[in-house]
Length: 63
Image (cartoon, rainbow, N blue to C red; front, side, top):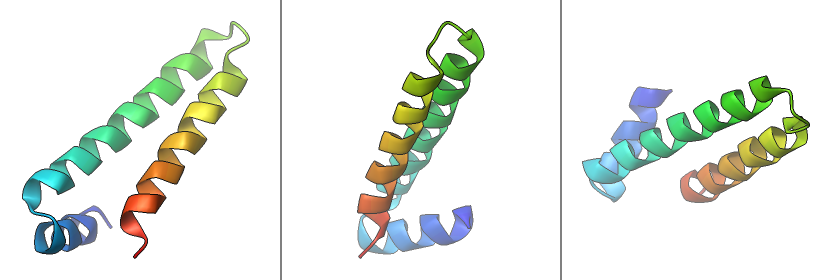
C-alpha cells in the first residue's frame, strides 16, 4: 500500500511529495495517539484530528 502510494506520487508529483504525505500521515497518527492517551477529555479532539488528517489525505490521493 505504502509502496504503491509512493510510486503514484513519484510519477505525478515527484518523490518529495510522497515523503511529505508519509510524514503528515505519521504525525497525524502520533497526534491522535497522544491526545487519545491523555484521558483529559480530549478523546473527541483526537478523533477530530484523525478524521481531519484522513480527509486531507483522501483529498490528495483521490483523482
